[in-house]
Structure formats: structure tokens, C-alpha cells
Length: 479
View 1: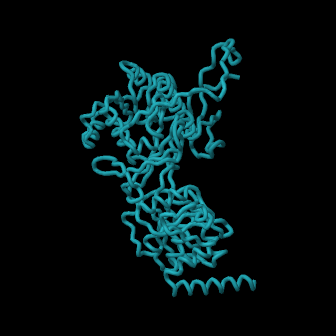
View 2 (view 1 turned 180 degrees about the vertical axis):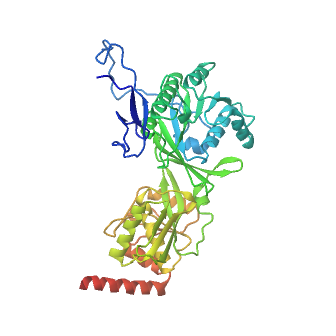
View 3 (view 1 turned 90 degrees about the vertical axis):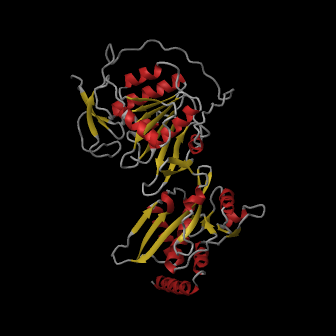
């Protein structure tokens, strides 16, 4: 039977099929298969042997290994996310939504490196040279000696990079536009993406050049062709942010030369991306401490403590199924908090619409925000503003118990620097302190204690809520 001349490749995960199908069995994506030319067979048939292999020396884990040198980009937030600077010979993938500022960040970093005497090259596959020059002029970077080219042919790009002195850093914007004439597939397909990324990573390893690859993000929030690219490169950074806010977050999700989950905070302005040295003060700058439903959460992003405001709004619902709207947090986590409040504390929110928002466009991923969310919900329900100088952190169990979280000391020290007076923490976190903490620690025994603490700031409404909760408890006991 003749071998088919073409195959169908899923553009999301790279799975192959002999015929077109509407849904990919590997990743579950719909309408992701595109027909591509099949790979050419090996000379001599499928059973052809490559000959006898060479012997490889086996070594132990212990040995002298030099620490990789770091190339400072001149942007401290970028160097922080990279683990202290860019590593020569590494490949870094930077993804983000269109218009979020990826190209601006890359151009600013290359300009600082070029002004520091490094040879840097910017390969633009989406914009013409004049467009890049206009952006550089708008950012005040036109005088930086950055070498620029607009090309998408992979062979031409490699020939250009291999000619002359070795570049210290190469930026390719974007990797989805690179195509090879040796592959019979359209630019942006999985085959072209794999070939382009492999060739550029191989060039980085052989020449000792840092390669920055800019990648598009799909509607699901992942870099197009994610598994194909992320496994090839040494580091993956995501550029996040809401274009309605001026804040931008550069987050590391993979880094072979540094910590993961590290973040860098930027502010978008007319002059480009500006570094934010004190993100906590920036995220808390516009908060209104007299409004019920707002609580300050002390979180940890990578190695950096970060204080953000959690905002909630609880209002009576006119719908059969109350609405739950969440921005910046896990909606499933909110549903769990609501269930625990209802079951163990008698705070019933089943007839209320609940809205939750993390101020500044930041997304919180750690369960340590449970305590702040619960306090903000009760505060909005009873109309009791929380003290302006208080913050909260801790995890809530399904039993209503409060669990401590890691790096509590770093969270409290960050709050003390910003002028906070009280920290609401689980009792186990309070017991960990061996010396006098810089803040007054309030440690409720369980979630009921937290609810009583919030209700104490509006005694009349708190007593009404407590009476209603006791009535619901008696009805349940009678049932």
C-alpha cells in the first residue's frame, strides 16, 4: 500500500491523523487539523540502519560545574524574572496577548544592551523596518545601535546571523512568522513552527547567543503551539495584563536557570514600559478604605511579597440562579468559600449575586487569599468596612479551620514597610514567631472567629446576621 503523501496535523498539540477529523483526540480541540505534506522516507527504506553508534562517557552527579554567566539586560524586572540576567546560549520564549507590550519590552531591552556595547540583532517578521524605527523613535531609542532586519525565511535569517561577529542577543518577533522553504506547509503551522524553533535553538546553543522568541497567545491564553515550543526552549515568560489597566506582569512559568513563578511588574506609559520598584504601593494606591467589601491580601509571587486589594460586592439577586462573577481569582475557589461560610458559619449567600475582583488586573493563584476573600464577602454583606491598616492571609479548609501558609514572615514584613498595623492570620502562623512581630497579629480560632471579627465593625447588622444564622441552624437541626 502506498504511503500517503499528506497527513493532518493538529495545530494545538501536534497530534497527527491520516484523515481530517473535527475534534482532536489528544487535546480535545475542535477544527484544529490542517493538511500538511508527509515527511520524506529515510533512504534505504524504513528498516535502514544508521550504522554503529559511538560510545558515550558516563559521569556521576558530583563534579565541578561552572555557574552560568549572566548578561544583564539593563531592565531589572526582566533580569529578576530571568533569574538574575540572561544566560548566553539559552533560548527564551516570551508570549502574551496582541498589543500587551511584548515588542516594546524586547526593543527596550535590546536598546539598553546595545548602548552597553553588546552586539544585538532584532529580526522582525510582522512589521516592516520603518514601523520598527517609528516605534523606536517614539520610545526615544532611535540612537541605540540595534541591528535590524525584516525577514521571515529561516535560511536567510540563519545566514544573516552567521555572517560577521557573534551577536550577544537575538530577538525574533515573532516565531510564528518564520518559515522554511524545505517544508511544504504554510507559515504558522506546527511543522513550520517546529522547524523554525529547532533551528533557532540549535543556533543559540552552538554560538553561545541568547535567543529571544516572541510568541502569539491563543484565545485560551496559551502560546500557539505550546507544547512544541515550550519543551524546546530554556525559559518561558508570559506577559500578562488587562489593556484597560496600565499594569503589566511578566511571569516566569519555566526557567532552567532560575526560579519559576517569579514576576516582574511594569507600567505602560507614553514612553514605553516603566519598571515598578514597589508594586504593593502601586496596587494599593487608589483603594478606598471606607468602602465595605474590600480587604488587603498579602501574597507571594515568586520570591516577592505583594500586597493587593480584593474587592467584593454582595447584592440581593432577582434571578433564579444568583450570579457569580470573578476577575483575577479562581471561580471554583470562590464557590468553595461560599459553601464553607454557609455550612459552618451560617452566612448564607445563596440569594445574593456575588462579584469578586482583584484590583490592578493582577491574577492570584495561591490559596492563601482564602482568608481575605472570606473577610471581604462578609464585610460587603453586613456593610462593615474593614480597618484600613489591616491585612489578611491564610487558607480555609472545608471544615472551616484556618491553615497557615508559607513565607508568612516575608508577607508581614512587606506590610510593615507600607504602614499596616494589624495582620489577621491563622493561629498556627502566629505561633511560628519566635520574637515580637512588626505588626499586631490577630489570630481567630476558625472561620467563625473571622466572621465575628468582621461583624464587630457593624454591631447592629452583625447581630441581625447572627440571629438569622442561628435560626437557620435550628431549622437544620429540626429537619
